Amino acid sequence: MREAADIHAVDEETVTNAREQAAAADRVVVKAGTNSLTDDESRLDRTKIDKLVTDIMDLRADGTEVLLVSSGAIGAGKGRLERSVEETVEETQALSTLGQSHLMRHYTQSFDRYDQKIAQLLLTEDDLSTPERFTNLHNTIETLLDWGVVPVINENDAVATEEVRIGDNDMLSASVAMGVDVDLLVTLTDVGGVYTANPKDDPAAERVEAVGANYDAVQGLVDDTAAETFGGIRTKVERARAVSEHGIPAIIAGSTEPNVLDRIASGDAVGTIFVPVNGEDNE
Ligand code: GLU
Image 1 (tube, rainbow, N blue to C red):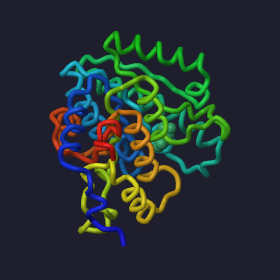
Image 2 (image 1 turned 90 degrees about the vertical axis):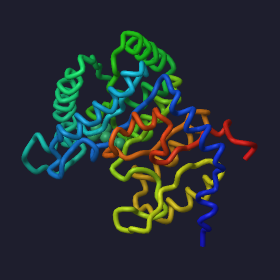
Image 3 (image 1 turned 60 degrees about the horizontal axis):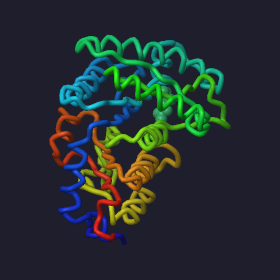
Image 4 (image 1 turned 90 degrees about the horizontal axis):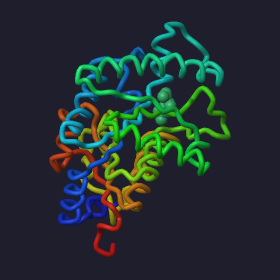
């Protein structure tokens, strides 16, 4: 039996410091998953998109630079095609192109409400692992941020074969966060953080406030409760930990929480924060 104390074991001062560090971030990667952008029929949900964009603009209003890593291309493609497909590799890749342009049209319209310009970057593993490509990517992102543009990043699913696939935007967002030196990674999900059980079917599930010295206990908990082997909460936790080991705080929080990014920027106890490992007291 895992003791509750192990799971909630990060001391208060460490948590406060990490929350303050997150609140002071000048450059943030925000990752939004397909469920946070589409409805039950896999159609892009403009209310959800508008909420995300408004949350991002709360950060922009304080002068914070934001990079958005957005999924939803394949999902939106399914909703847009309006006929059932088997979802072979070819079909999934084609769906991504159908959905990606649709997704960007909605983002453009939504950000236009604030006169905020956005740009699209579609990446594969090669772009992250080949030094010359990565340098170009880094320079492009720096230039866009300098111009006050919000880069919207996704995997280039149309060309990403099994060998060069990143495969999961939790990996992509973490790589971008570590690669372009951001101050905070926020992963928005429809769950709202790391919980002691699945909050969707266990009302007694408690939110884990912080992950640091208790990482092994939290990882064990996630291994016990999460069914999926790829994607889902396990990858989110592993990647958030990798980012925090890089000295960058990472927060997993609920996409439907009111003013979620504004509250993070105020240092509120939203979601689960992964404390930067160099910020802990020899633990
Ligand atoms: N790149 C995929 C898409 O846009 C999403 C991958 C993921 O959900 O992590 O549909």
